[in-house]
Length: 263
Image 1 (cartoon, helix red, strand yellow):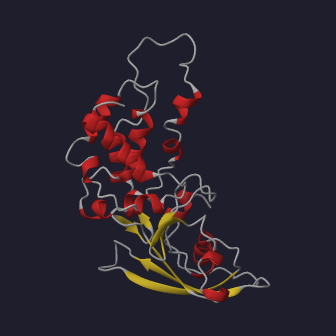
Image 2: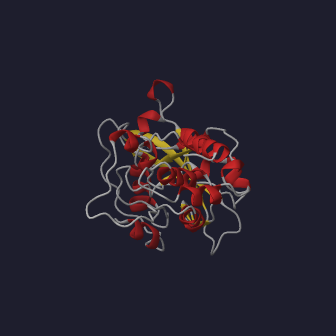
Image 3: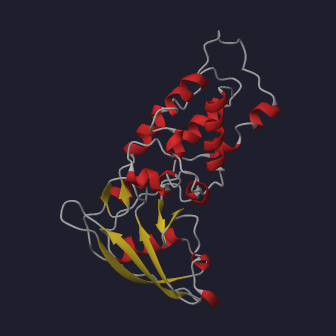
């Protein structure tokens, strides 16, 4: 099933034939926050009892619900390998990628069955269930000019860069635009005009690129009242990043570049 399929095939509530329970499976209660803008006035919680192995991922549990228990469940996913960033959601209150979180890491002490809560990421409009509107997030991303800017004549060959210069921004090249960091930020929840951590991370990637000549333009953008100065350094973003990017550090480096006007 592709991401688009998961979004669009949500009209049928029919159940499929459940597969045999695998040996060693435990029964897990999964509580999912549901909301259908066409029919619901308020969100609700639906609970499902699912047989699962400790090695299963949370994404496997969602697939089980959709394929065998309730075909109307809607969520977004694509590669299912932690690369595309499509399946970001709040799992037990923490932003994570459903394809990277293993059931065994959510079990209570002694590996006993537990209740897993799954909600959409916060701060973005909910289309349905776990599917949010990512456009405000990508609008902020586009606003910081996340591409190479160079006004010099194009070289006949590639623009050379030393290993040390490349290492300067290596960490922020890892962003997969999952929005885990941005939607974990309390400032972003309460102020929708804040650029958010992911946009700043992607600006950082080019501000400190020795081949780029657009740093001043981006710094001017980020010095706006809704730019880096809105960050309150709570470290939520760093904790939420599934790629291990030092998001808070990158934001502080952009602040420092603005203060000292050098990059």
